[in-house]
Length: 250
Image (tube, rainbow, N blue to C red; front, side):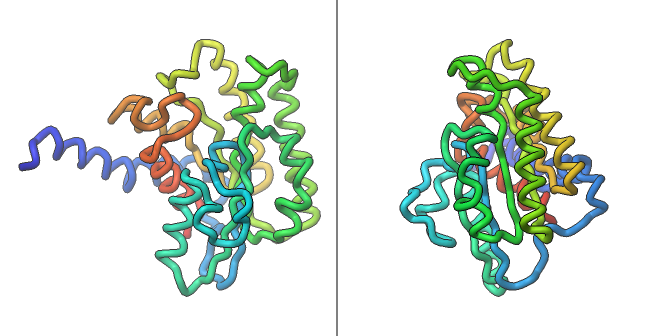
């Protein structure tokens, strides 16, 4: 029998997905005026780009559209199964080109092959945690200014090459209570704010992942959603999918 406690928790999780996430997404995207990023047009190509959170252990040799092992085991897999299962008539072509450990300048180094040659209609980018994290431990000398400038340069060149591309930018996040997160991460919030400014300036959808995980922590600890504070669990990846789909205004 379902206990009252379990019932209340289930109700809270449902509210998080159906009410809280859409409200946070709407508040973060007032600059779009309800613009539909992912419309009903048939045959759209959707490209997911980023670091390990996007990569999520994907098989890089299976790089074809909609290839199951090529989607990895994270939020991209959740998102693509949602899109393909819900809208078979739209004939989406989805690709994952995230690579673990990458920073913005490393995206730029492979951008011709891993983005421009694919000619995406919708380009989703989640990048930034390594631009900060590696400055703590990997002798990387980047700053938030480098991150923002590199990101803007990458997007400006992309839009110049593909003027009709529709953009979705994910908010880099650090979930409080995760094992990798310490007081040193206070400076990371500047990267989040930079990503939001960039999204607004480029007319991109902005996925407020950090804010959504903050709300999720009211229901369960970081160990449930994102154990190290950076790499989401299955539950965390599901939440990210909910947020991405809401942002795309499918």
